[in-house]
Image (cartoon, rainbow, N blue to C red; front, side, top):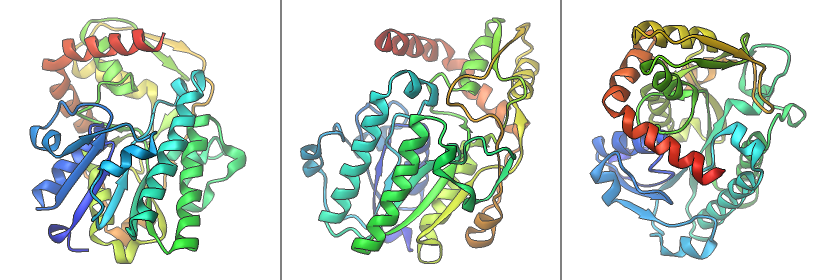
Length: 322
């Protein structure tokens, strides 16, 4: 797929991966249109190209252009434990996904890329997972259910309507453009203030993937769409690190006096996961380049001058959800 001659819609364009993808596509000369419910604070050009609507309302999608070569669907409520506490957020994910799929079908758009998650593997009893190992019986949370459903809808729309798809399963993406309470930015915030860092699951081992590597996998999926279509790919680092290790590394790199407080794992959260990326490497020539130490160092450098703003946004989110 010749990206420079393409027009691509990116839903969730104000999010961490969405904004970074839009930037990467713009650098390649792609005609990008974003759509999000939240203002884009990160990039003025992406902001200018973003249409701000609520995708839960199907009538709002009528406001979008119709002449896209492909739709990249990232828009979702993405905090696993928050969806455990507030299942209505999972309902919203289902609704958004269905509305976007119907927008694609009704406007004769023949290609879609869906951002899924390593959550679909659940806690299966082993740690390294290939793409064939996703099972409904391992569904740990309502967030996981929305990703499994999303993958199923894409399979169905390909069978029924000939809409070609690529599914990419991300794993613990970290880096810039994230003002959520995800592990890495939250731990950085705590470390910079020498506050205690709470570890939910001392033995939890996960595959942390730097934002640039995640977006590189998406771009390669788009560039090689004809080769990669109608398949699922793990886009991750293929290396597992404990949450404790991540916290210790952040403490070291920030020269913090923070102490680690160990808690039990929270409901709905996967405890052990490392991606098998051999399929993505073979088909997409995908090879992540950023090791954990370098990625965490770059992330700390990005957050350090913005930490006050990050904490203010986190406080607003806590108030709005209470």
